[in-house]
Length: 322
Image 1 (cartoon, rainbow, N blue to C red):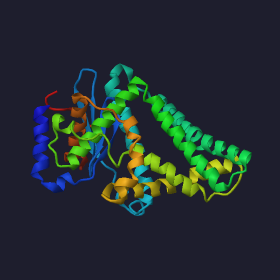
Image 2: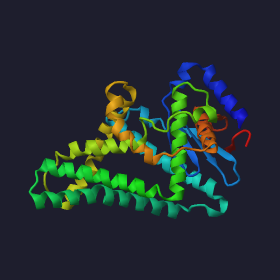
Image 3: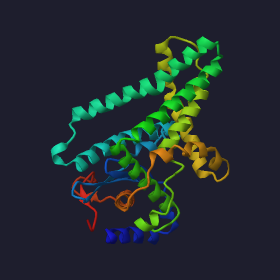
Image 4: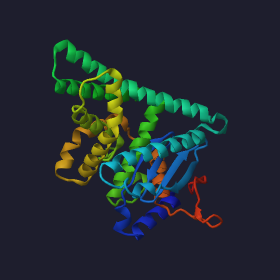
């Protein structure tokens, strides 16, 4: 593994500052980390034997084409792509970390996705809306007050949900990999050598985190949903689902601007960063090694398949030294 870190750092520092200015991001998966470079996705997962299995594949090109590259629209498009690739990475990481005999079937995966989507609609859309409608009718509140209550309730449900699942041992471990992902990206963006001892010194909090993004979505949703008039329950729930792409797009632009700002953005985004103290944990050296390996995969040029003329996609490799 030491040799792999040396090669990665040689590549980064040989290319100068331009290489380290590449906007990178990622997410934690089961016993691993997924990273996104400018052109590629990189995945690193530790298997039951302690080996780090690596995969990489090209990022989709459609995000750079019209109309998906334009402001606001690009936010929702990016979210769709992250969900698509994230589910792929979760499936791969589950297969690797659980072992061959415990693979998740396509049916089990589809049922899990369906249950998750239903839970999102019920917990984070329908429940806060119904609660606000009840309180507004009971206390004769204005439409603006009802929307404020809905937004606060949605935020409270989300924070409570995250805090509750963090008590689960397996989720707590994913949160440790989340911390490893953030520390690695912070070190990378500060031009630090990507070695576990140095990366460990960086913060596990990052401005572009998806957790902070979801908090911003809740706040922006209060403003956008305030424009919705009265109607039946199905209409109100449906209208919120229909307006979700707009809310996500506006939230994305805010997060993007705040991440690049050292004045207004640094302070306005601060409340949203607090939730990361729940969704990230201090990682171990082994977990930092995995995160660094994932970033190396995301930044590594993908070999061309000479037979098909395309890029090789998703070939398992082991991190050098493991």
